[in-house]
Amino acid sequence: MYQFGQMEAGNGGGAITLGPGNIHARPSISRGFGQRVEDLQRAADIDLLVDLGVRIGSAEWFRGALTILALCYAAVSLAPGLEPVAGAVPAALTEAQLDEARAFSFGPLAYGADTGRRMAATDAVRPLTDTPERPIIELTAMVGRGDGFARVLQRAGVSTEEAGRLEALIGGSIEFSDIKEGTPVALTLGRRADRNVARPLEALTFRARFDLKIEVNRAEGRLALARIPIAVDDTPLRIQGQVGSSLYSAARASGAPASAVQSYLRAIASQVNVGSLGAGDHFDIIIEHRRAETGETETGKLLYAGLERSGGKKIQMMQWNQGAGQQWFEASGVGKQSGMLQRPVPGSVSSNFGMRRHPILGYSRMHKGMDFRAGYGTPILAATDGRVARAGWAGGYGKQVRISHRGGLTTSYSHMSRIVAAPGQSVRQGQVIGYVGSTGLSTGPHLHYELYRNGTPVNPNLVKFTQRAQPSGSDLASFRSKLRGLLGVPLGSAKAQVRDAEAKTAAKSIKA
Image 1 (cartoon, rainbow, N blue to C red):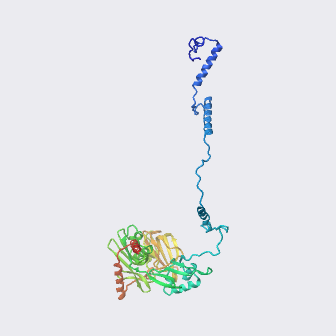
Image 2 (cartoon, one colour; image 1 turned 45 degrees about the vertical axis):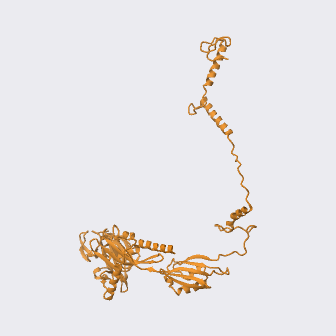
Image 3 (cartoon, helix red, strand yellow; image 1 turned 60 degrees about the vertical axis):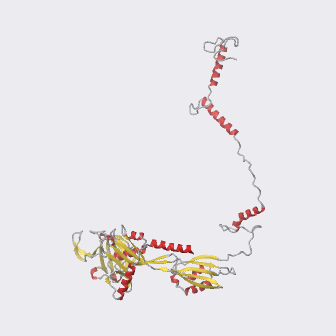
């Protein structure tokens, strides 16, 4: 054995030093030993962890790549297989369990399931010669617009003869015109002896009126009718509140129906400029309202319109039958009497018909109508019934509406801020057609009103507007009595009263 670096004497017959200039052997022997020493040194310096990110393509890099591939191949070769591992085998089903599984597997399809498909006749499933029928059928029919009561029953499966008998039976107790469209009718159809005929009616229930429920039941082969009265509280609903930024929004937020708020605005507009109302003003609305003991509520027409101005002025208006129909009267009893034309706005006249100096053009010319003072946004009402001939921009007139009336009359409303009526639309006297503005050649918000007869301008002052009337005697006493009764209605909100009715209904059901 040789020890690299130095070989001592006595080991192999002499001392040999493996360093440069210290090898005293023959040249061939020296080269063999030196090469072997260098190879052994290089083998000792081999690094198995090669960084493949540097010296790419070198011999060392290829050696590292081959080493990694060899290791991956060894890992894949020595990895376990993916064959399933055998587990526990479940016990076999008993005969009863098999029958139950079979029933649940084809039972839904045999009965039609949700798809409507049925299994064909096989050894497992055969059609029955006589399938059983449901003993009773409970359903709900709905009364449609213009529906006859017998027709409603026939659509539900009642025979024509029995539907006619039921209509005659029920018609002797109520008026079918009282039944509102959309009223549900609950029916119970019984068992029939022959499948080729309609099922007989066993029971029928529906709400004939707000205060009446009708029930029909079969007893001893005959139909018997029962009227079930429903107690109704007819106390009107009173809603008060502050105008704030918007009278309409404030009234709606307080629980007043939209139709009642619109009627209120029309009534108040006949006395005051709605656009002049301030945030501190207070409104007072009373409407028809009925509450049934079963919890339902029903709202009717506006009965009273009140307004308390922050400046101290108070307006009280109530509907009252005068002459041909109902109209609005002030608390003093002064009301509007039907006439030929109605004032389009409640403001006073600022400029009459005739020659005048135009405030913008600066020269005199014919003023073909009347100017009414009115605040911006005041509703403009149709003077009488007619059809809208035009509605839109009309040059210096600004936004304008023209209405054609009977007898060759035409009325014109100009300088509007907004138009409501549409061309070709039929309007009634007092209907809102637009709102006061200052469009076109105008120095400020007002209404320019013109009247034409067969196309020729006519002085509106020559045609009387509607006049005021006042009940007298016993009629005036009745008017004041009704007004006192309305003013005595307690304050409440529609939302609160609905909650009270629901609470009473819930309490009755708990007691039952």
